[in-house]
Amino acid sequence: MKIVCSQNPPVLDEAVGIAFAMYTSPTSGEIGRIGSSIPIELRRSGFVVDSVSWDFLTIALAVIAADQGCLRQGSADGWTRQIDLCVSVQSPLTWRPHAAALEKALGFLTGDIWTVEFEGGGPTPPARPKRRRRGQRRPSGDIVCLLSGGMDSLVGAIDLVDQGQTPILVSQRASGDSDRQRAFAAKIGPTLTHLQLSHAARPPGTAERSQRARSIIFLAYGLLAAAALRTSGVAEPVQLVVPENGFISMNVPLTNLRIGTLSTRTTHPFFLEQIQAIWAAVGLSVEIQNPYQFQTKGELLTGCRRQDLLQKLASQSTSCGRFGRYGYKHCGRCIPCLVRRAAFLKWGQPDGTEYEFADLKAQRDFDDVRSLAMACLRVQADGVERWAAGAISYAELGDPTPFMETVGRGIDEARDLLRASGVL
Image (tube, rainbow, N blue to C red; front, side):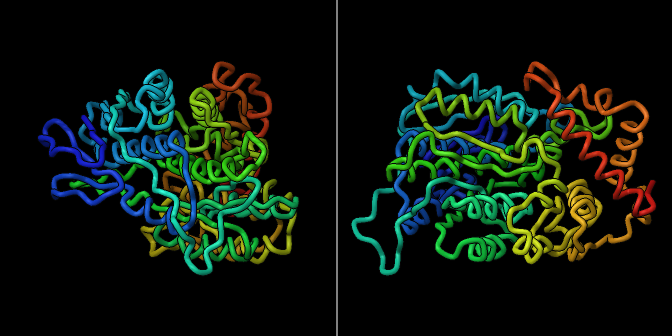
C-alpha cells in the first residue's frame, strides 16, 4: 500500500494507495487528513518550533496516517503490511540518510515492512505570534513529561514536581481522557505548562484499529515541547520523560500465540533507543528517559513520592485497552486492566476503579485472563528466563538481567492477583 502525505496531495487510485492532507483540510473526500488543528493549537499555546523538530512531527503524523489507513486484513497473513510511505518534509536531505534506521524502528514497532521516502516542499512550522493573547503565558519549564491520563504518567509527573522540577506536561487528546489530563495537570501543578494536541487522523475509508504506531506521535509532541525549552535556554540535552513501568514496557508475549507485535511495543526500550539514535543523528539534543524501566507497576505506585496525592487520583486514571468500548469504563479483564489490578493489590491501597467485569474468577476463560494465568504457571514451573528469553535478547538490550528480573516481579504481582481472585 502506498501512502502519500503532503499539504496538497493528489487523489490516488484506491488500488494503489491513499493520500493524506497534512495540517489542512483536504479538497476531496477521497483524501484523508491528519494534524489539521496542530498549527493553530501551537500558536495559541505560544510554542515556537525549529524546522528539524517540526519535520519529525510531520514524519510521525505520516506514520500514524499510514498505520490507520492500511488495513491489516488485506495483508497476506492478516497482520503484516507492506507500507510504502512518501512524506513531504522541509529538509529531505537531512532525513534521507536515516530512512533505513527509521524503517527498522517502525518495523519493530508495528510488525510491518516499511519503505520511507522523503520529498521536499513540506509544510513549515507555525510562525511565532506577533503578540501574545491576553492572559497567555509563555511555555516554561526545565524538563518535559508525557501525561496520558494513565497511572504511570500520573506518577511520573507527580514525582518530577516533588523533586523540584518544572515539567511541561504533554498529552495526546483522546475521547474519555482529555478532561482527565487537564484535571491531573491542574492538581499536580496549577502553574505548569500543559500542551494538549490531537493528530485527528481521518482516513478516507475504514480505519485500522490496531494502531501499533501510536507512541511515535507521543514522542513527537514531547519533542516539540523540548524544542521550546531548547530555545529558552534550558541546558541541553533536554530531558523527555516517558513514564512506563518496566513490565508493560517490555510486554513479553504471554503465550506462543502472541509473538511479535501481537503484543504492543509502544514504549519498548529498544524502540526508544532507535528513535533516540535518529534524533542524535539529525542534531536534536533531546534525551528520552524512562525512570521506571526497572520497576513493576506495583513498585511504581509504592514508590511514588506523594502518596497522599496519588491515593486521591490513582483510581481516576485510565489503563484499559478497551476503554471506549464500554462507555469509557474499565473492562477489568484485558492485560492492562489486569496489570492495574495487580498493582493496586501490591500497593495495598483500595482500588476505586469501576470495572465492567469485576469478578475475575467468572472471566477465567476470557483470552487475556487465561493467557496471563498460563504465563504465571509456566514461569512458576520453568522460571522466568525460559519464558521470556525470546523477547529479551542480548542483541536488542545488552545485559538482559535487569529486564528479566523486572518482568519476573511483574509476573509475581499478576500471580498474586489471580490467586486472590480464585483464577489460580
